[in-house]
Amino acid sequence: MEIGAQFGFGLELASDLWIPGAVAPAPDSKAPALRIAIAAAQSNSPDARFDREGEAIVYSHPAGSFRCHPDRIEIAPSEPADLEDLAVLLIANALPAVLWLRGAFVLHAACVRLPDGLTIAIAGPSGAGKSRLAASLVEAGAELIGDDSLALMVSGDDVLAAGLPGGWFSRSEEGSPRQFVRIPGKATSGMARLDLLAILDGEQLAAGGHSPITAFELLMQNRHRPQIPLLLGLQRQVLAHAVQIARRLPLVGLGACRGSIEDLAATRTALGHLARSVRYARPPGLMGSAGE
Amino acid sequence: MGEQLWKRSDDWVGSEIEDAFVMVNIESGKYVALNITATTVWEAMETPVDQPAIERALREAYSVSPEDCHRSVTALLAQMQDLQLASQA
Image 1 (cartoon, rainbow over the protein chains, first blue to last red):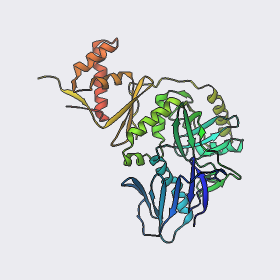
Image 2 (spheres, rainbow over the protein chains, first blue to last red):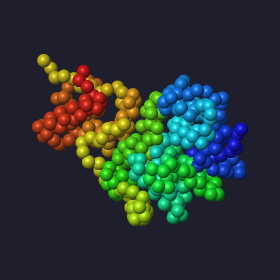
Image 3 (cartoon, one colour):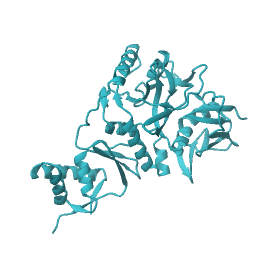
Image 4 (cartoon, rainbow over the protein chains, first blue to last red):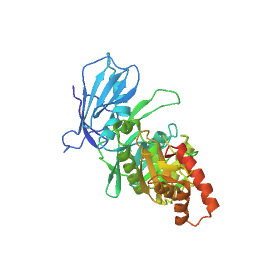
C-alpha cells in the first residue's frame, strides 16, 4: 500500500498516504526518518482532540485517529476511510505533533526564498494573508519552503526552516472549499537558512523592525498546535528554543495584507526594503504581555 | 505585625534575552516578558521577601525616589499576582 518515498519538513518520509506538499526525495536519499502507516479501520472519537499516551501523542478525529511517535505515525481510519480527509488531518495535526516530538519549534507560518536568496518566514493571525502573500511571491519567482506549518531548528548561529514545499491549500474565492495547488516539478530543497521573521498584522505590530523580546512573544503567539508541547511537558525546551530563535532571527512587521493586488505589491516592496534595513526598537511598557 | 512576604511561583521557568527576562508557565503554557525593572523584582524574590526589601533592592540598582519606587513596586507586585507569577506567602 506504500505510496513511496516522499520528502517534507526536512525529512525522508515513507507513507501509505499521499502527503499534500511533500516532494520527491533526492536521488541519494537515506532511510526514511518517518514512516506513516494506515492500520485497520476502527470507530473513532466524535470529537477532535489531542491526548498523550505514554511517549506518544494521539490525535483523535471522527475521520480517524493518528498515533504519533518521533519516527512513525499509525493511522486508524474510520469506516469508510476518506483518504483525502486523512491527508489534510495528517498535515494539519499529526505532522506538527511529530515535529514537536522530534524537538523542532513548530511555527504557524508560510516561508519563501526570494529570488535574491533571502529566506523569510511569514507569520500572523488566521486571515492576515500569509498564504496569499506567499503565493504572490512564488508567482513572482520566489521558492516555496512551506505553507501553514514550519519546523524551525537552531544550528550554530543559524535558524533552519523546513515545511512542505510542493504546494499549498488555497481558496479560489471567499467561502469556497480549499483546494491544493501543486507546484509542478518541485524537488527537495532540504532545510533552508532563515534570514527574517515577518509578521503580517497591522493592528498588532507596527511596520518596521522590532526587538528580540518582541520576536520571542510573536514566536510564542504563533506556535502551531501549542497544546502538544504542553501535553509532553516540554515547556522548558520550548522556552529555550524560542529564546534562541528570537536572538538569531530579525523580526519585522509588515502591516496588514488583505490580498488585493495593491496590497500584495506594497507588501512585496516593503519586504524587500525591510529585509535590508532591520532596526530594533525597545518594547514599550513596564512588563510585556502574557500570552496563551 | 511585620510586612507580608512575597514569594515566586514555582510553575515558571525563565531565560534572559537582550536586557529582559522571559518566562513560560510549565503548567499552562502562558508566557510573559519582564523588563529590566520587573526582572530585578523577580530576582529579589529568590527567597520569600517583604515589599520594603524588594524596594531596597530596586533602589540599590537604580536611581529612583522612594515614593516612585514604592508606587512602581506596588503596581508590579499586583500585576505579578494577577499573572500568578508571585503570591503572598
